[in-house]
Image (cartoon, rainbow, N blue to C red; front, top):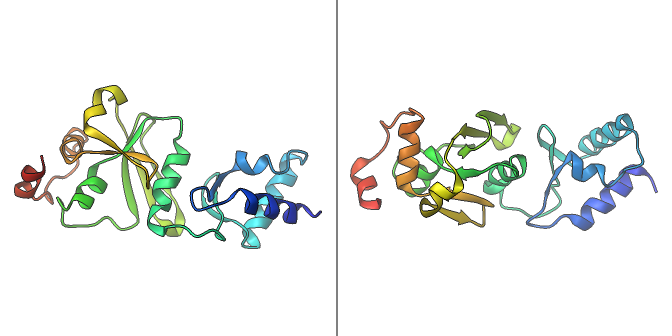
Length: 182
């Protein structure tokens, strides 16, 4: 079987509505006998042929699966920093709660035990990770698990604390509404 057809067969067997993002290490398992150069050429060909779409460095999207487009950035963030403590916070939480009037388009903000970084995900937007020294245990009462995003989500109270701690602008916050939610 041709390598591209073999890769297509394996990915189509593995992919579903919950698992449509693949790291290079996932794809490498589909053709372990190839040299590094041949593997890179195979992945590039898969992207060129439309079998995969590159989300960001090292992460690929399988477009033949039905998915919720608004969740790709969240799922990508969960995959990219799977070994770190991460939670949705800052403008993303405040916008979802209606505490700030502007909705960040194609931009999500997360607090992370990893380093601060902005990841460009092309047409899908950007993921902004902001470093925090807080531990999961210290925030347990202010976080809830968002199963649709595959990430923890801060309360409005915690998101406002994070905004102040990271010195982000609080000018857009509707303080009257925020106090009702806290």
